[in-house]
Image 1 (tube, protein in one colour):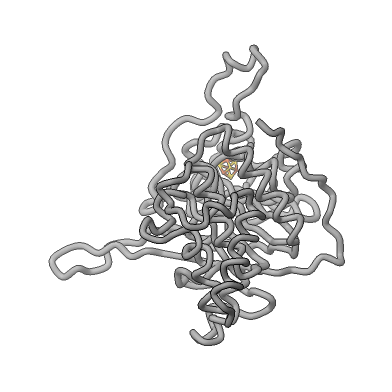
Image 2 (image 1 turned 45 degrees about the horizontal axis):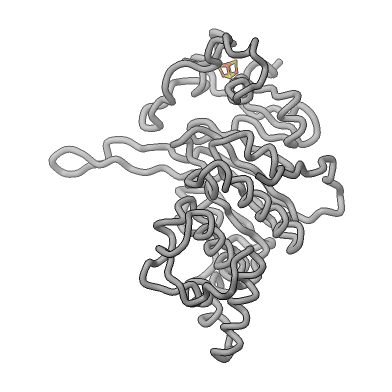
Length: 337
Ligand code: SF4
């Protein structure tokens, strides 16, 4: 297995430009019930989320299943409309754009899906899967299209000899490479990687992560890397946001988050990672209990029923974002004087 490359940190400087800004984004799903199908409640899947992504940066978004991270990712591509809030891409509010105006941005914003099995049309050849968007957006001949698809296949480590094959003829890792080539086909500047390795074998995961990393460096891509696995995010992203029940509870540079995490939930996630230290095997589990339902989240701090540092005020008062230092933000009463 190829070793994972650890990115250098301390890269942020004033010259870096924001590519994407997410401001107070909310997505509530209504729940209908009763004889008249009235709105009986709301699932607060995303509840007041804000962050920036800089040019050439990978931002990791981590949290347990159902915390709202995929919903955030899809809204940043306007694959889903928000309940409220804004997403600015290259300074344009994408929710205010008309369909035609949005179409101009589409080639620059792409997604790599979690499941390489269901995200590829089984009736299409590799040439058609990778080349479909190119033929829609660019006016090129069939020969040029084929050459472009072949070069994209080479870029992601697939032999162009397989250009006429169908998805079922490939392994999971190869299918994910096809998905990556498709995402790169129009030369995007922003890619969402939505759990791109969680459906793959561990040995293949490292190859795909290294491929994403080298492509990101070659093309200076910005990425939102969504995962439930903090160790994967730590290897790839320069900054990491931790989500819990629809809210970002901590956001910091990845090295700082690993060594000086402030939120009890981040600390629990870090403590739950496998360790080679035999002494750590007797440790009690860092977190107990399931994630509460977003339909009826706990009052005050949503994390309070599972928090080892819970205080009386946590049960009633919603914490506000606290800036611990430049670029390190936390949502916890422990730091609220
Ligand atoms: Fe724990 Fe209270 Fe902080 Fe929530 S606000 S994480 S319950 S200490």
